[in-house]
Length: 125
Image (cartoon, rainbow, N blue to C red; front, top):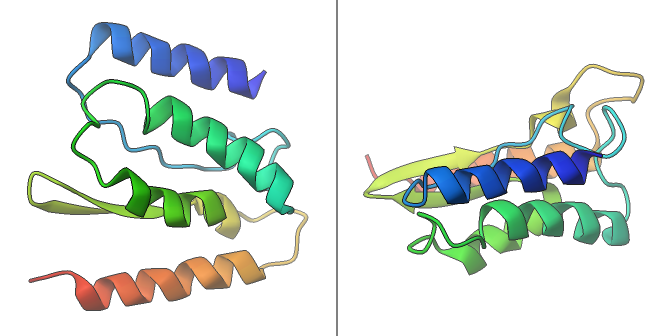
């Protein structure tokens, strides 16, 4: 059901806002299992790949994005950095820090925060 909703939304955006840049930001209601991010490489490839294909690869305003740069971290944990018209965007996967029945912080969450810290060191002021 989640994939159907994501696909419908991306199709709507392509049809109605073809020049709009779409930067997906993931959270607790954006995954197959509520409050559970993908825990195996197969699940990550399936889920993050589906979101990437529907919101980064689709033919709308994203044609100038560094898609390979985005793919590197997005496929690992659903987060990424990109520049749009000289503005740096850091998109995080907030699900990794959601309060739920899982013990936090987790290894993926810590990796994301380490990545974020490195990004702040490289953004020109």
